[in-house]
Length: 103
Image (cartoon, rainbow, N blue to C red; front, side, top):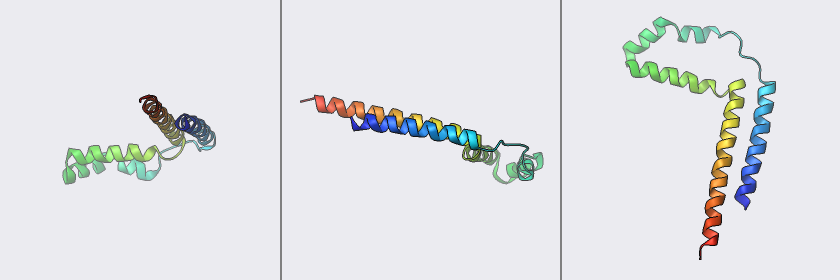
């Protein structure tokens, strides 16, 4: 039963926090100069020469993952994580109630 309350708490607090972050986060305007340089063809070419295609893909993934932790994308990240944690808590509560019912 406690796991169900925890799921509800995580869901409510997480979604409220996500809404607040979404409302108060600044809009991501133009990309700054560092992002433009990093996405330049020469940068990717040099990175491919040094580390191969895998290094280019890893750099793109790293930039995407880093973008999830600021601005409005952070609100979506918080929302998805709170829903995932709530689902895990409901599943744990379901497993605990099934164990309590077994003799």
